[in-house]
Amino acid sequence: MTAEQIFDAAKLGAGIAALGVLGGGLALGIATKGVLDAIARQPEIKAEAFKNFIIGAGLAEATSIYALFIALLLIFSK
Image (tube, rainbow, N blue to C red; front, side, top):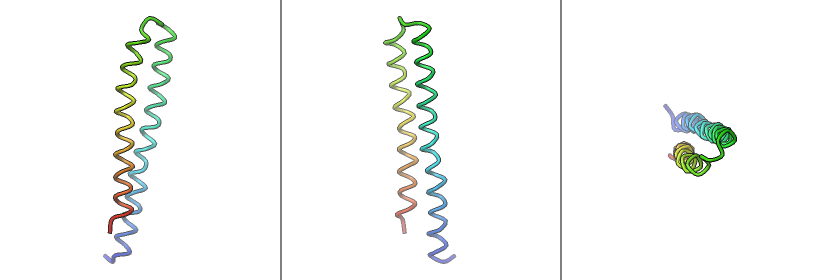
């Protein structure tokens, strides 16, 4: 394999890794919908539901950041 082929493969891998960012965005959207539905049905659980949502949103964001970091490593590696 030539250096150019390896660099092209890294770009492809970065594109695939960037799909992980989409997964995090979808997860946050679904989680937000679920929390809003739960609060609409039972307003008294607002504090507990919001606390759990923040923990879940942080985990979903972390996976998106990891995917972005991997994509950037693949793009800028030699």
